[in-house]
Length: 225
Image 1: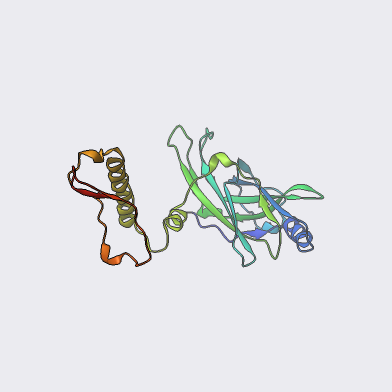
Image 2: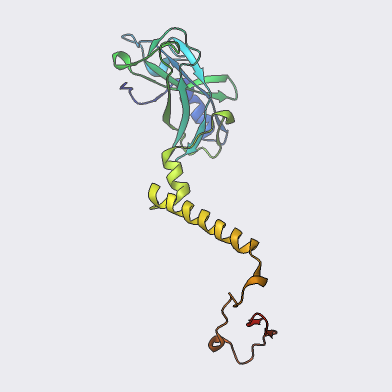
């Protein structure tokens, strides 16, 4: 497992943050990966681009956490990669109203990187979540590729409801299916063939001022209401 240092705001990212704090929007655009090594004397916050960018990915999802940070999600795959490489650096890009697209923040795993093989050797696809600073920005957005939409286990649990398990969700689905079958049978039933009324009226619960219209069906021996 790769060991990335925390995401570091670049100087251009810090500059954009200062603009965001006075009301300008913060718009994330994409995620990039590369195999660049951070050499001695070089600082992450000085970077204006990944050291050696290898691949760019669309953003799948954005969630503003509410504590001054946001979570950006993307799907990393080697679909179009013909030659494998070590994923040493990950960068998040954003739109600066004055400079255009900038490298907002970046992380580097150095010698603790994972190898991403070519697609021909072994297809690979995994999800990464980048937690980054947004400060008190009121308008945080991202360019999202809707074709990459997926549901995480956490979101599926939220959809199912608190305390739900796979077993309870399946039971609910089975119960709903059985109810649908019973309703279909009832809907298609021909009541004229019954010799007894299948609907029970409890006369003890009828209020004194409640009126019921009906008649006694002598042939079928039932009270019709």
